[in-house]
Amino acid sequence: DAKTTQPPSMDCAEGRAANLPCNHSTISGNEYVYWYRQIHSQGPQYIIHGLKNNETNEMASLIITEDRKSSTLILPHATLRDTAVYYCIVRTRSSGNTPLVFGKGTRLSVIA
Amino acid sequence: DARVTQTPRDKVTEMGQEVTMRCQPILGHNTVFWYRQTMMQGLELLAYFRNRAPLDDSGMPKDRFSAEMPDATLATLKIQPSEPRDSAVYFCASGLVGGETQYFGPGTRLLVL
Image (spheres, rainbow over the protein chains, first blue to last red):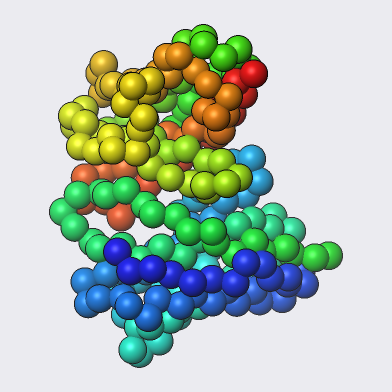
């Protein structure tokens, strides 16, 4: 699976959009971009995933560049409860549900 | 609201003691994962099962760790004997074969003195 690079930390004002970048310059054609987050003292939680089209769900939006070498997770209106470590994971989609390889992630602090 | 459950939530033990952690995957999920999280190593895979069969346990120290699924509703992770370096949070996750997501339990926080 391709390696990802994320900033170690970011701050965001409550109510503003949080834009979390991820670089995955070695991504291959059959690899998807997944985002999970881990709120303090909890297990990781799935947020969203995508291949090449932008994706949106009730939690967030995922913007993937045309060359697929980078992506941005957008939390449109960040709240204090969004304070967490956010992990960007590149993973081949296969017939099985294969293990996740976590990096260090980005620690997002939402500030009142 | 279906959830992965893990017991115990916290465990303090002395070096050399046996530790057993249990996980109840979401009903119907046929893929189960064990991950460990430490400050130094972050989140790393220990083992995972599909339809109760172990597929990969290369992340586990074989001499002291063992993982099993006695039935579809229970996964266990045992450490015998435990060592201080095993102190970590152990997460169980479950999902469906072919599914896109994994659902994590709340973790077992282990402290080996």
